[in-house]
Length: 238
Image (cartoon, rainbow, N blue to C red):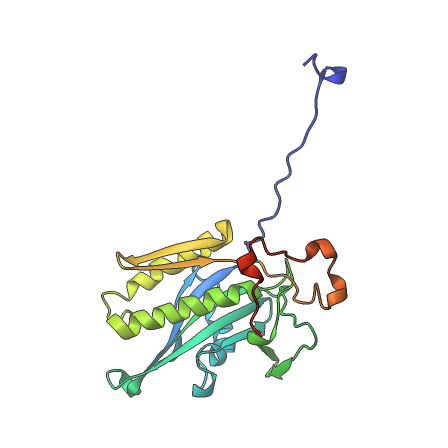
């Protein structure tokens, strides 16, 4: 066009990498009274092979002392983060129902703590307690920890209140929700799951920054100190 110098304009559009596209797969597993730990559902389909699941199933469906904890297992090219739920009730076979919701990430993602890193090697695998680690922007799975906890505990509540997983009529719903969760978290960083008119589960990824960015008083400048905008906010209790 003649309005441009030299009568033409050249530009390029570069699509930035989606910061929320870390979740490679999501799965649901449970303890079967005949077959033991079983991978019931995963998205994408066949992402984890049976042999791969066998290598980490003892941590996805762990012993009683490891229930209600986030466990991260590094096996070959992936990190698998699971939250195990154990519900005791006489209506279940063996008086107990055990299930796990799991997230899968690339092996190059990290778990980082500000002062110390613990590494426990068990049978050529690394088992890490994610509760002890903080976030490293762009290369950590820590921001998915509250989402996994909320998802697993929400399913636990549904199971206790309405036998959501024990009832074969409602159990297939979990197979519908998990692909939606993975897709929306990867694309938008948030997700809404509508169980029914009275139950909605909302998830959102909140980026966390290193807690030691301002590790001392000397790190603050005068213009960074908040000032009360009202006299009512200036009252202090001794």
